Length: 104
Image (cartoon, rainbow, N blue to C red; front, side, top):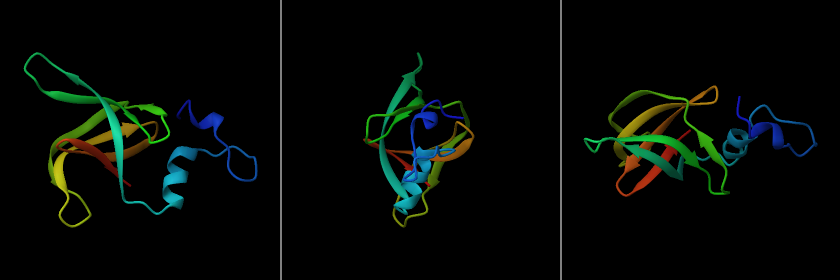
C-alpha cells in the first residue's frame, strides 16, 4: 500500500485505504494531468519511475506491465500508454507529447 495513504484521512477522521485515489474518484475524473519523473536509457527510451499529483505528492511506480500506443477512453485522446502498478492499483499512464495524464 502507499506510504502516503496512512497520512491521509477522510471527512470522519478515519483513515482511508487509499485516500489519494478516493479523492480523485469522488470528483468523477477520467483524465488527470500529472507530473512524471522518467528515466532515459542510453538509447533514449523513456521509462516513468514516479508520478506527481497536483498537490505535490509523489507516488512511486512499482512496475510497468505493458507499453505501447493506445487510444484513451475519452474520444480523441491517444498516446504512448504505460500500464503501471502504483501500490496495489493498476493505472493507465499516457504520454501525450508534451504532457502526461492518467486515466481512472
